[in-house]
Amino acid sequence: MSNNRKAGQDDPESEDEVYEVVDLTEYARRHQWWSRVFGNNSGPIAEKYSVATQLMMGGVTGWCAGYVFQRVGKIAATAIGGGFLLLQIANHSGYVQVDWKKVEKDVNKAKKHLKKKANKAAPEINTFIEEVKATDFIKRNIVLSSGFVGGFFLGLAS
Image 1 (cartoon, helix red, strand yellow):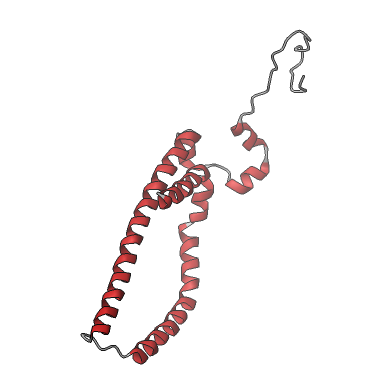
Image 2 (tube, rainbow, N blue to C red; image 1 turned 30 degrees about the vertical axis):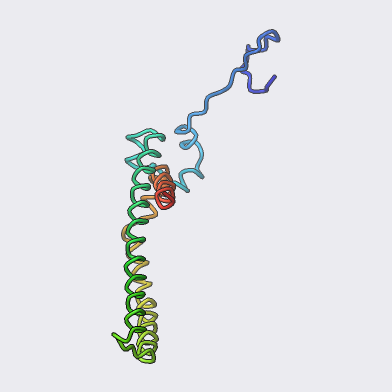
């Protein structure tokens, strides 16, 4: 028999075991680490809906976003690849004459320009993230956010 029996339940003839039900809301209130990790309140969404509903809402919206992202990515890759293929065919057939040295020079110039812009943009992106407080939203709505991430990956895979 288990040590999880309550007092007065030591009847050796009883085969049923009694377990204690743990309320997660009370557990979160009693343990400080939970509040430090996820904040003092878990946000407005967690207060209105059950965990299963939050996971479902996050999963469905994540799947939709992942599916759209996948479709748009395929269309963009097809358009870019098809355009490059047509350019190569036109070049090979003599319809278009490409100065590859100039293309290489321009691409290298663009790469240097992008590196400079990326280094300047990084602090702006960090301040934007801090202003939006995306991490606070994720912490307050951890169940919804995790459902969204899982659904997003499922949407990408489908």
